[in-house]
Structure formats: structure tokens, C-alpha cells
Amino acid sequence: MNRQLIEDTFRLLQTEMSPIAGIQLYLSPAECEQLLAVLERHDLEYDRKVHLLGIYTILTVAAQRHMECVPHHPELTRNILDGDYLYSFYLQFAVKCRELDLVAYLAPSIKKLQIRRSNGDFTEQNPAAGIEEFLLQERSQRSRTSKAI
Image 1 (cartoon, rainbow, N blue to C red):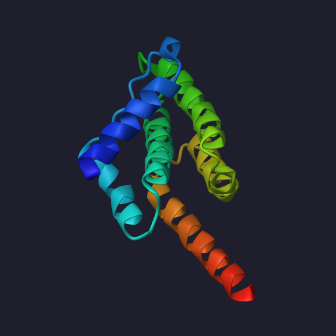
Image 2 (cartoon, rainbow, N blue to C red):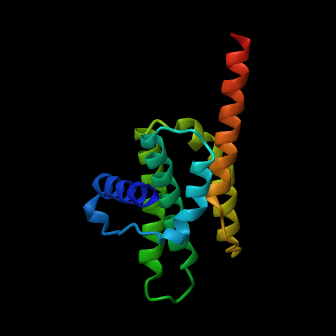
């Protein structure tokens, strides 16, 4: 199932992303594993799993491109532009997938990460942790709502 989920996610991302950007989205199965473990712990529809894995993939690859931004690197400009495009694509993709609450939840941590990176702090990020925190909060809110009814 995980293999199919990964394949469906990458297929969807490639159809949504502008071919003009010339960016190939790829994560190894090991890189996907962080979020796959999160998705297994939550009772989610298959399409939502695809969307969340897509968001995770975009954020991870965007961060990787920005982490490769070191002075005098021959691909510096390309890495900056790719990373910036991917962060924009993340927002576009998340809106299309109706994950606005997730975007709002992740926005402060993504902005802090970008600020740290601009100051030379290239500490690894873990978008899977943020997505899991969001899913836990979402489940808690649903539980409170159903109890109130």
C-alpha cells in the first residue's frame, strides 16, 4: 500500500506542477517513511493521505533546495528559485486539496525556519512532526465537537 501511495502522490504532483519549472520531485522511500508512519496512525481517507504526502514532499524538497544555497555554488540561483517556487507550489497545492487549516497551522513554523535559514542556521526540519501535531489537534477538535452534539 505504501508503494502505491507514494506512486500516486508523485504522479499527482507531477501533473499539478508546471513543466516549465523543470523540477523533478523525488523522495526516497526512507525519506517518505517519516510521514508514512504518521499516516498509518491516523484513520484518513486514501485521497487525503495522497494530499498530505504531497504537501510533505513539496515542503521537504523545497527545504532541500534551500539547504543547498551556499555562496559561490554554481547552482545557487537555481536552488534559490527552485526552493521559492516549491514553497509557492506548496500553497497552491494545499489550497487545491482544501488543506487551508494545515497551511495556517504550519505557517508559523515554516516562517521561523525560513528566517533561521536566512541567518545561516540550516538545521534539519521535520514537516512530518508538524503534520502529525495538526492531525492530532484536528482529531481532538472533532472529538470535542461530536461530544457537544
